[in-house]
Image (tube, rainbow, N blue to C red; front, side, top):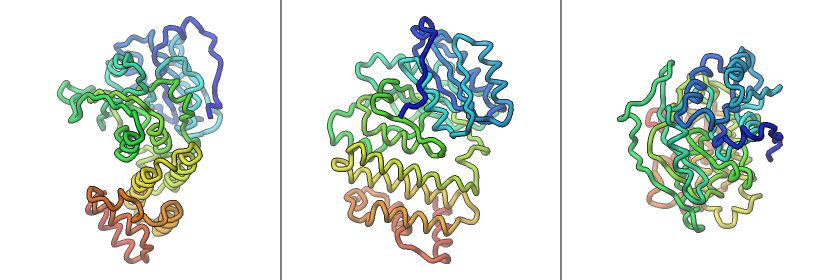
Length: 360
Protein backbone atom coordinates (compact mmCIF):
# COMPACT_ATOMS: atom_id res chain seq x y z
CA UNK A 1 0.00 0.00 0.00
CA UNK A 2 3.07 2.26 0.11
CA UNK A 3 2.41 4.09 -3.15
CA UNK A 4 4.43 7.21 -2.39
CA UNK A 5 7.92 5.68 -2.14
CA UNK A 6 10.87 7.71 -3.47
CA UNK A 7 14.59 7.05 -4.02
CA UNK A 8 17.07 8.77 -1.71
CA UNK A 9 20.13 10.52 -3.16
CA UNK A 10 21.87 11.92 -0.08
CA UNK A 11 23.36 8.58 0.96
CA UNK A 12 25.91 9.92 3.46
CA UNK A 13 23.28 12.00 5.25
CA UNK A 14 20.91 9.04 5.36
CA UNK A 15 23.51 6.94 7.15
CA UNK A 16 23.47 9.40 10.06
CA UNK A 17 19.70 9.54 10.38
CA UNK A 18 18.29 7.53 13.27
CA UNK A 19 14.76 8.91 13.29
CA UNK A 20 12.45 10.26 10.62
CA UNK A 21 9.89 12.68 12.06
CA UNK A 22 6.82 12.95 9.82
CA UNK A 23 4.60 16.01 10.25
CA UNK A 24 1.39 16.37 8.19
CA UNK A 25 0.62 20.06 7.67
CA UNK A 26 -2.62 21.72 6.65
CA UNK A 27 -3.29 25.41 7.34
CA UNK A 28 -1.05 25.40 10.42
CA UNK A 29 0.56 28.84 10.07
CA UNK A 30 -0.33 29.64 13.68
CA UNK A 31 1.25 26.47 15.10
CA UNK A 32 4.04 25.11 12.92
CA UNK A 33 6.84 27.27 14.36
CA UNK A 34 6.05 26.02 17.85
CA UNK A 35 6.10 22.43 16.65
CA UNK A 36 9.31 22.68 14.62
CA UNK A 37 11.16 24.58 17.32
CA UNK A 38 10.53 21.65 19.63
CA UNK A 39 11.87 19.19 17.03
CA UNK A 40 15.06 20.95 15.91
CA UNK A 41 16.07 21.49 19.53
CA UNK A 42 15.90 17.81 20.49
CA UNK A 43 18.62 16.62 22.87
CA UNK A 44 19.36 13.65 20.62
CA UNK A 45 20.94 16.11 18.15
CA UNK A 46 19.62 17.46 14.87
CA UNK A 47 22.19 15.37 12.96
CA UNK A 48 20.29 12.23 14.02
CA UNK A 49 16.91 13.50 12.90
CA UNK A 50 15.20 13.85 9.54
CA UNK A 51 12.15 16.11 9.53
CA UNK A 52 9.63 15.44 6.78
CA UNK A 53 6.86 18.03 6.52
CA UNK A 54 4.09 17.13 4.11
CA UNK A 55 1.92 20.07 3.15
CA UNK A 56 -1.57 18.77 2.44
CA UNK A 57 -2.62 21.45 -0.07
CA UNK A 58 -2.78 24.28 2.49
CA UNK A 59 -4.66 27.43 1.53
CA UNK A 60 -2.79 29.77 3.92
CA UNK A 61 0.95 30.51 4.00
CA UNK A 62 1.95 27.23 5.66
CA UNK A 63 4.12 26.30 2.66
CA UNK A 64 6.08 29.55 2.86
CA UNK A 65 6.79 28.94 6.52
CA UNK A 66 7.90 25.39 5.83
CA UNK A 67 10.23 26.49 3.04
CA UNK A 68 11.83 29.02 5.39
CA UNK A 69 12.51 26.23 7.85
CA UNK A 70 13.89 24.01 5.10
CA UNK A 71 16.38 26.76 4.17
CA UNK A 72 17.57 26.87 7.78
CA UNK A 73 18.03 23.09 7.97
CA UNK A 74 18.63 21.92 4.38
CA UNK A 75 20.43 18.74 5.44
CA UNK A 76 17.78 17.61 7.89
CA UNK A 77 14.46 18.84 6.60
CA UNK A 78 12.35 17.90 3.60
CA UNK A 79 9.22 19.78 2.53
CA UNK A 80 6.85 17.78 0.35
CA UNK A 81 3.92 19.51 -1.32
CA UNK A 82 0.74 17.62 -2.15
CA UNK A 83 -1.43 19.12 -4.88
CA UNK A 84 -4.63 17.66 -3.43
CA UNK A 85 -5.88 17.44 0.14
CA UNK A 86 -5.86 13.83 1.32
CA UNK A 87 -6.13 14.57 5.05
CA UNK A 88 -3.60 13.40 7.61
CA UNK A 89 -3.66 9.78 6.48
CA UNK A 90 -2.44 10.57 2.98
CA UNK A 91 0.16 13.05 4.28
CA UNK A 92 1.61 10.47 6.66
CA UNK A 93 1.70 7.82 3.94
CA UNK A 94 3.53 10.25 1.66
CA UNK A 95 5.98 11.04 4.45
CA UNK A 96 6.72 7.33 4.93
CA UNK A 97 7.83 7.17 1.32
CA UNK A 98 10.55 9.75 2.03
CA UNK A 99 11.68 8.38 5.40
CA UNK A 100 15.26 7.11 5.59
CA UNK A 101 15.54 6.55 9.34
CA UNK A 102 15.26 3.12 10.92
CA UNK A 103 12.67 4.57 13.29
CA UNK A 104 9.68 6.80 12.54
CA UNK A 105 7.84 9.30 14.74
CA UNK A 106 4.59 11.00 13.74
CA UNK A 107 4.00 14.46 15.19
CA UNK A 108 0.92 16.59 14.53
CA UNK A 109 1.70 20.13 13.39
CA UNK A 110 -0.27 21.84 16.17
CA UNK A 111 1.41 19.76 18.88
CA UNK A 112 4.91 19.90 20.35
CA UNK A 113 7.24 17.62 22.29
CA UNK A 114 9.52 17.72 25.31
CA UNK A 115 13.20 18.57 24.59
CA UNK A 116 14.29 14.97 25.26
CA UNK A 117 11.29 13.31 23.60
CA UNK A 118 13.20 11.51 20.85
CA UNK A 119 16.20 10.68 23.02
CA UNK A 120 14.09 9.12 25.77
CA UNK A 121 12.22 6.99 23.24
CA UNK A 122 15.27 6.06 21.17
CA UNK A 123 17.28 4.88 24.19
CA UNK A 124 14.83 1.98 24.50
CA UNK A 125 15.33 0.76 20.93
CA UNK A 126 18.29 -1.45 21.82
CA UNK A 127 15.80 -4.00 23.17
CA UNK A 128 16.02 -6.97 20.81
CA UNK A 129 13.00 -7.39 18.55
CA UNK A 130 11.35 -4.16 19.65
CA UNK A 131 8.65 -2.82 17.32
CA UNK A 132 7.55 0.32 19.14
CA UNK A 133 8.20 2.66 22.07
CA UNK A 134 5.31 4.65 23.56
CA UNK A 135 5.19 7.58 25.98
CA UNK A 136 2.38 9.33 27.80
CA UNK A 137 0.63 12.43 26.48
CA UNK A 138 -0.47 15.62 28.21
CA UNK A 139 -3.49 17.58 26.99
CA UNK A 140 -2.30 21.16 26.60
CA UNK A 141 -4.24 24.41 26.18
CA UNK A 142 -1.20 26.74 26.12
CA UNK A 143 -0.73 28.86 23.01
CA UNK A 144 2.99 29.19 23.62
CA UNK A 145 5.23 26.16 24.07
CA UNK A 146 5.06 25.07 27.67
CA UNK A 147 7.20 22.25 29.02
CA UNK A 148 6.27 19.89 31.82
CA UNK A 149 7.77 20.17 35.26
CA UNK A 150 9.43 17.04 36.64
CA UNK A 151 6.26 16.34 38.57
CA UNK A 152 4.02 16.83 35.52
CA UNK A 153 6.12 14.40 33.49
CA UNK A 154 5.17 11.64 35.90
CA UNK A 155 2.07 9.60 35.20
CA UNK A 156 0.14 6.88 36.98
CA UNK A 157 1.69 4.36 34.60
CA UNK A 158 5.05 2.69 35.16
CA UNK A 159 7.66 1.76 32.62
CA UNK A 160 6.94 -1.69 31.26
CA UNK A 161 7.47 -3.99 28.31
CA UNK A 162 4.70 -5.80 26.48
CA UNK A 163 5.53 -9.09 24.78
CA UNK A 164 2.97 -10.79 22.55
CA UNK A 165 4.06 -14.41 22.23
CA UNK A 166 0.88 -16.40 21.58
CA UNK A 167 -2.72 -16.17 20.44
CA UNK A 168 -4.17 -15.60 23.91
CA UNK A 169 -1.83 -12.69 24.58
CA UNK A 170 -2.82 -11.13 21.27
CA UNK A 171 -6.50 -11.59 22.09
CA UNK A 172 -5.89 -9.73 25.33
CA UNK A 173 -4.09 -6.96 23.46
CA UNK A 174 -6.88 -6.51 20.91
CA UNK A 175 -9.56 -6.52 23.61
CA UNK A 176 -7.80 -4.35 26.18
CA UNK A 177 -6.29 -1.92 23.67
CA UNK A 178 -3.13 -1.41 25.74
CA UNK A 179 -1.58 0.51 22.84
CA UNK A 180 -3.50 3.74 22.13
CA UNK A 181 -4.78 4.05 18.54
CA UNK A 182 -3.13 7.43 17.97
CA UNK A 183 -0.10 7.78 15.70
CA UNK A 184 1.65 10.39 17.85
CA UNK A 185 3.58 9.74 21.10
CA UNK A 186 5.26 6.70 19.57
CA UNK A 187 8.57 5.70 17.99
CA UNK A 188 8.00 2.88 15.51
CA UNK A 189 10.41 0.71 13.60
CA UNK A 190 9.85 1.62 9.96
CA UNK A 191 10.44 -1.93 8.73
CA UNK A 192 7.66 -3.18 11.02
CA UNK A 193 5.13 -0.89 9.30
CA UNK A 194 6.36 -1.70 5.81
CA UNK A 195 6.66 -5.47 6.23
CA UNK A 196 3.13 -5.71 7.62
CA UNK A 197 1.63 -3.20 5.19
CA UNK A 198 0.38 -0.96 7.99
CA UNK A 199 -0.82 2.27 6.40
CA UNK A 200 -3.31 5.07 7.02
CA UNK A 201 -6.66 5.40 5.25
CA UNK A 202 -6.60 8.43 2.95
CA UNK A 203 -9.15 11.17 2.47
CA UNK A 204 -10.83 10.39 5.80
CA UNK A 205 -10.66 11.57 9.38
CA UNK A 206 -10.47 9.08 12.28
CA UNK A 207 -7.72 7.35 10.30
CA UNK A 208 -5.94 6.39 13.53
CA UNK A 209 -8.73 3.93 14.40
CA UNK A 210 -7.76 1.76 11.44
CA UNK A 211 -3.99 2.21 11.77
CA UNK A 212 -3.85 1.57 15.51
CA UNK A 213 -6.15 -1.44 15.31
CA UNK A 214 -4.19 -3.14 12.53
CA UNK A 215 -0.97 -2.73 14.52
CA UNK A 216 -2.44 -4.85 17.33
CA UNK A 217 -2.56 -7.90 15.05
CA UNK A 218 1.16 -7.75 14.19
CA UNK A 219 3.10 -6.13 17.03
CA UNK A 220 5.30 -8.45 19.09
CA UNK A 221 7.23 -6.26 21.51
CA UNK A 222 6.43 -2.77 22.83
CA UNK A 223 8.09 -0.64 25.48
CA UNK A 224 6.07 1.91 27.49
CA UNK A 225 8.11 4.65 29.16
CA UNK A 226 5.34 5.78 31.50
CA UNK A 227 6.57 9.39 31.14
CA UNK A 228 4.69 12.36 29.65
CA UNK A 229 6.78 13.61 26.77
CA UNK A 230 4.21 14.68 24.17
CA UNK A 231 2.03 17.80 24.26
CA UNK A 232 -1.36 17.26 22.61
CA UNK A 233 -2.76 20.71 21.87
CA UNK A 234 -6.49 20.90 22.46
CA UNK A 235 -7.34 22.85 19.34
CA UNK A 236 -10.98 23.93 19.20
CA UNK A 237 -10.57 24.45 15.45
CA UNK A 238 -9.43 20.88 14.79
CA UNK A 239 -11.51 18.74 12.47
CA UNK A 240 -12.22 16.08 15.08
CA UNK A 241 -13.47 18.59 17.67
CA UNK A 242 -15.48 20.59 15.15
CA UNK A 243 -19.21 20.46 15.69
CA UNK A 244 -21.87 19.87 13.02
CA UNK A 245 -19.29 18.45 10.58
CA UNK A 246 -20.79 15.97 8.13
CA UNK A 247 -17.40 14.33 7.80
CA UNK A 248 -17.82 12.71 11.25
CA UNK A 249 -19.52 9.87 9.40
CA UNK A 250 -15.99 8.98 8.26
CA UNK A 251 -15.78 7.03 11.50
CA UNK A 252 -18.17 4.47 10.05
CA UNK A 253 -16.24 4.32 6.78
CA UNK A 254 -12.96 3.74 8.63
CA UNK A 255 -14.52 0.99 10.75
CA UNK A 256 -15.97 -0.65 7.64
CA UNK A 257 -12.51 -0.61 6.09
CA UNK A 258 -11.01 -2.06 9.28
CA UNK A 259 -13.61 -4.83 9.46
CA UNK A 260 -13.02 -5.76 5.82
CA UNK A 261 -9.23 -5.78 6.15
CA UNK A 262 -8.91 -7.82 9.34
CA UNK A 263 -10.95 -10.49 7.56
CA UNK A 264 -8.89 -10.17 4.36
CA UNK A 265 -5.67 -10.45 6.39
CA UNK A 266 -6.87 -13.76 7.86
CA UNK A 267 -7.62 -12.78 11.46
CA UNK A 268 -11.37 -13.46 11.66
CA UNK A 269 -11.27 -17.19 12.42
CA UNK A 270 -8.99 -16.83 15.44
CA UNK A 271 -10.07 -13.42 16.70
CA UNK A 272 -13.72 -12.88 15.73
CA UNK A 273 -14.89 -12.40 19.33
CA UNK A 274 -12.18 -9.78 19.91
CA UNK A 275 -12.89 -8.09 16.57
CA UNK A 276 -16.54 -7.71 17.56
CA UNK A 277 -15.58 -6.46 21.02
CA UNK A 278 -13.32 -3.83 19.47
CA UNK A 279 -16.18 -2.86 17.14
CA UNK A 280 -18.40 -2.17 20.17
CA UNK A 281 -15.92 0.46 21.34
CA UNK A 282 -14.13 1.87 18.28
CA UNK A 283 -17.35 2.11 16.27
CA UNK A 284 -20.64 1.90 18.19
CA UNK A 285 -19.77 3.68 21.44
CA UNK A 286 -17.36 6.07 19.74
CA UNK A 287 -19.97 7.11 17.16
CA UNK A 288 -22.64 7.52 19.83
CA UNK A 289 -20.25 9.96 21.49
CA UNK A 290 -19.93 11.83 18.18
CA UNK A 291 -23.70 11.96 17.74
CA UNK A 292 -24.26 13.27 21.25
CA UNK A 293 -21.33 15.69 21.59
CA UNK A 294 -20.50 16.89 18.07
CA UNK A 295 -23.98 17.93 16.98
CA UNK A 296 -26.71 20.16 18.39
CA UNK A 297 -29.29 18.79 18.35
CA UNK A 298 -28.07 15.19 17.97
CA UNK A 299 -29.15 13.97 14.51
CA UNK A 300 -31.71 11.19 14.60
CA UNK A 301 -30.77 10.11 11.09
CA UNK A 302 -27.20 9.35 12.20
CA UNK A 303 -28.54 7.28 15.07
CA UNK A 304 -30.59 5.23 12.59
CA UNK A 305 -27.58 4.95 10.29
CA UNK A 306 -25.45 3.64 13.15
CA UNK A 307 -28.12 1.11 14.10
CA UNK A 308 -28.24 -0.31 10.59
CA UNK A 309 -24.43 -0.28 10.30
CA UNK A 310 -24.01 -2.05 13.65
CA UNK A 311 -26.56 -4.75 12.82
CA UNK A 312 -24.89 -5.34 9.46
CA UNK A 313 -21.61 -6.21 11.19
CA UNK A 314 -22.73 -7.75 14.50
CA UNK A 315 -26.29 -9.02 14.20
CA UNK A 316 -26.73 -9.60 17.94
CA UNK A 317 -24.11 -8.38 20.44
CA UNK A 318 -25.51 -10.75 23.06
CA UNK A 319 -23.88 -13.61 21.16
CA UNK A 320 -20.44 -12.21 22.01
CA UNK A 321 -18.88 -13.74 25.14
CA UNK A 322 -17.27 -10.47 26.23
CA UNK A 323 -20.54 -8.56 25.94
CA UNK A 324 -22.12 -10.94 28.43
CA UNK A 325 -19.16 -10.98 30.82
CA UNK A 326 -19.51 -9.51 34.30
CA UNK A 327 -16.73 -6.99 33.70
CA UNK A 328 -18.45 -5.45 30.65
CA UNK A 329 -19.67 -2.04 31.93
CA UNK A 330 -23.42 -2.02 32.36
CA UNK A 331 -23.69 1.57 31.08
CA UNK A 332 -21.95 0.60 27.85
CA UNK A 333 -24.25 -2.40 27.45
CA UNK A 334 -27.32 -0.19 27.90
CA UNK A 335 -26.07 2.31 25.32
CA UNK A 336 -25.31 -0.40 22.77
CA UNK A 337 -28.71 -1.98 23.40
CA UNK A 338 -30.20 1.45 22.70
CA UNK A 339 -28.47 1.55 19.31
CA UNK A 340 -29.93 -1.83 18.34
CA UNK A 341 -33.37 -0.97 19.73
CA UNK A 342 -34.32 1.45 16.94
CA UNK A 343 -36.03 4.08 19.10
CA UNK A 344 -38.44 6.67 17.79
CA UNK A 345 -37.36 10.33 17.78
CA UNK A 346 -38.88 11.22 21.13
CA UNK A 347 -37.13 8.40 22.98
CA UNK A 348 -33.91 8.98 21.05
CA UNK A 349 -33.60 12.60 22.17
CA UNK A 350 -34.24 11.59 25.80
CA UNK A 351 -31.66 8.80 25.45
CA UNK A 352 -29.10 11.21 23.97
CA UNK A 353 -29.71 13.75 26.75
CA UNK A 354 -29.22 11.05 29.38
CA UNK A 355 -25.91 9.99 27.80
CA UNK A 356 -24.68 13.58 27.65
CA UNK A 357 -25.65 14.15 31.28
CA UNK A 358 -24.15 10.91 32.61
CA UNK A 359 -21.11 10.90 30.33
CA UNK A 360 -19.67 8.18 28.13
